[in-house]
Image (tube, rainbow, N blue to C red; front, side):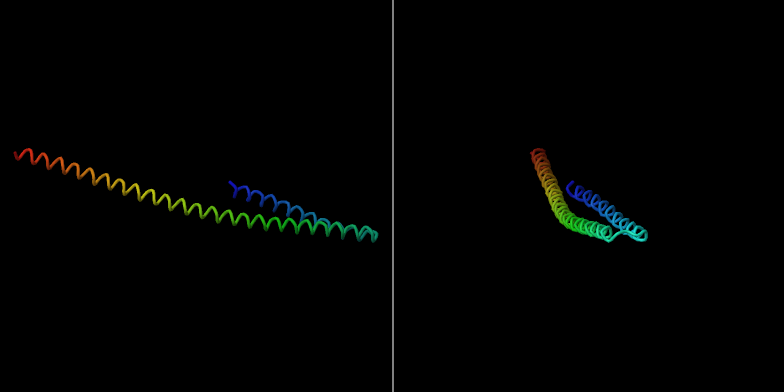
Length: 125
């Protein structure tokens, strides 16, 4: 469940990154279109500031994504280890059960042999 939760967070973060990159692309496109209309230096400065802020935001999102992917990998490793341990325990349980069945079968045969031996001894008297 924890792994599933991390994967959902990764998917949400990737959607945020896509949206932010689309916004950044739109900002560049809008700036180029407006610059041909003759905008002031202050407005261009504001565009660049906004674009730089968006780049920083995208960089932080990528850092969060890297952390989540590392967490996902760690959780996958923990899951695989737990799965191996479960399989080992299952195999051990199966072997012990087979040994128990074999031992019970052996005891039943000994009991039947003893009963048969007593009947042979009693019929011989």
